Image 1 (spheres, rainbow, N blue to C red):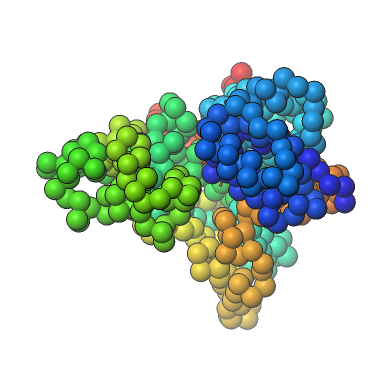
Image 2: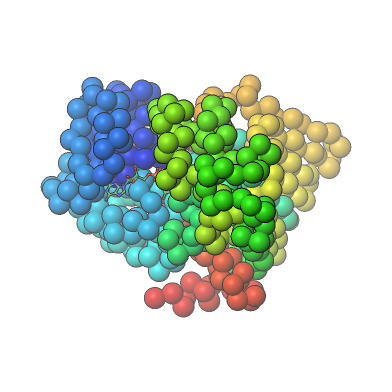
Amino acid sequence: MKKLKAVILGYGGRGSIYGDYAADLHPEALEIVAIADPNKKRQNFAAEKHKADNPKIYNDWKEIAAQPKMADFAVIATQDAMHLEQALAMIEKGYHLLLEKPMATTPEDCKKIVEAAEKKGVKIIVCHVLRFTKFWYTIKEILDRGEIGDVVSVSHFENVGNLHQAHSFVRGSWKSAAESSPMILAKSCHDTDMLQWLIGKECKKVQSFGSLTHFCKENQPAGAPHRCSDGCPHAETCVYNAQKVYLDDSLWYKGYSFGKMTNEEILEELKTSRYGVCVYDAGNDVVDHQVVNMEFEGGITASFSMNGFNEGGRYIHIFGTKGELHAVMGEATIDVYSFETREHTLYELAKIGEHINAGHGGGDIGIMDDAMKYFNDEPASKGICSARTSYISHLIAFAAEESRLTGKVIDLEEYSKNLL
Ligand SMILES: NC(=O)c1ccc[n+]([C@@H]2O[C@H](COP(=O)([O-])OP(=O)(O)OC[C@H]3O[C@@H](n4cnc5c(N)ncnc54)[C@H](O)[C@@H]3O)[C@@H](O)[C@H]2O)c1
C-alpha cells in the first residue's frame, strides 16, 4: 500500500490523536507534512512529536489552504463551527478529508460539504469512530448474519457520565448551542449514525424531549463563588470541584485539556480557565438529558436516551424476530439470546478483538487503519460509508433538536426537502 501524506488542521485533543497514528503507530503508512494550530504549546508539542517527519507548522489553517495541494488528505480537527469553511476550502484543493464530527453545525452547511465533495470527486470520512471499534463492528456482523432475525425495535443509551457532562457540556467547548452545536448533535451524532448503520434502513420520523435541569444557577449551593478557586465553602464535598477533578491522574480530562502541565501550573490556569468555573454558574445552555424516538422504514422503532447522570458508557438492546442482543460497551460483552435454542451466546471482545482499551474502544486507531485503505483506493471495512450517509444520520440529530424545540414529530423526508 502506498504511504500517504496528510495535513492536520487543528492539533488539539483530536488532531493529535490522529497524528499519533503517524508518529507512534504506523510511520511506514502515514507522513504528516503540515500542521496548523495557533496555540504555541500545541505547535511545540506537534513539532516534537512529529520530528521524524519534520512537518511545516503554521499558525492558521488558511496558510495551508492557500498553497498548492501538498498531501493526499486533510484531517479537520478544529472546533465544530470552523469545519464548514475549512472543508469547502480543502475540497476545492482536491484533498480527501478525515473530517471530525459534527461535519458542520447546521443541516444546510453539512449538505454544502457533501455536495461539494460529490462534485469534486473527493472522499470524506466523517469521524464516526465507533463504527471502527471491535464492539460495534461485531454487533453489526451479528445482525448482518441474521442471528437475531429481522430487527423490530432498538433501545439505546448513551450515558455521557456526570464528569464528562460537566467538563465538555457545562464548562467546555460544547456548553453553548450557538457557539458549537446542540448537544444531541455534538455528542450523539455517533449514536444516530450507529442506529442508522445497525438497522440498515432509512429513518422516517423523529420525536424528542429534553432540557437542562441540573447544571444551572438555581442549583448553585449557597455561598458558592463563580470559581472553585475563590474559596468555595463546598470544596470538600462537591464532586465537580475543578481543583480536584483536574488534578486527578485517573481521569482523562486532565491530560486531554492540560497536556503535560504540572499540578501547580494547572491550579494557576484554573484561576482563569473555563474549566475552573462552578458547574452551577457556567453560563451553559445545552441540555443535560434528552430522549429521542425514531421510526425507521418498515415500522422499526428505536428509542434513545442521552444524559449526564451516570458513570458513563453506552449500552444497547436490539430486539429481533429470532432473538435479542444486549451489549454493554464498557464491559466489552455482547449477549445474544436465541428464541430457537433458548440459549445465550456471550461474545467477550477482549478475547477476540484488538485495540479494545485504546481511545473510543479502539475506534481512534480503527478509523485510521481504514482511512489508509480507503484513501489508497484499497478495499476497506464495512465501517466506511459515504459522506452522504453520514449527512443523513446527522439529519436525524438535527431533526431531534427541531422536535425538542418545537414539540413536533419531524418527518425526515419533508425536513430534508425543505433544507436550502
Ligand atoms: N470523533 C469523536 O469522537 C470526537 C471526540 C471529541 C471531539 N470531537 C470533535 O473534534 C473536533 C476537535 O475537538 P477537540 O476536542 O480536539 O478540540 P480542541 O479545542 O482540543 O482542538 C481544536 C484545535 O484547533 C485549533 N485551532 C483554532 N483555530 C485554528 C485555526 N485558525 N487554524 C488551525 N487550528 C486552529 C485550536 O488551537 C485547538 O488546538 C470538534 O469538532 C469536536 O466536536 C470528536
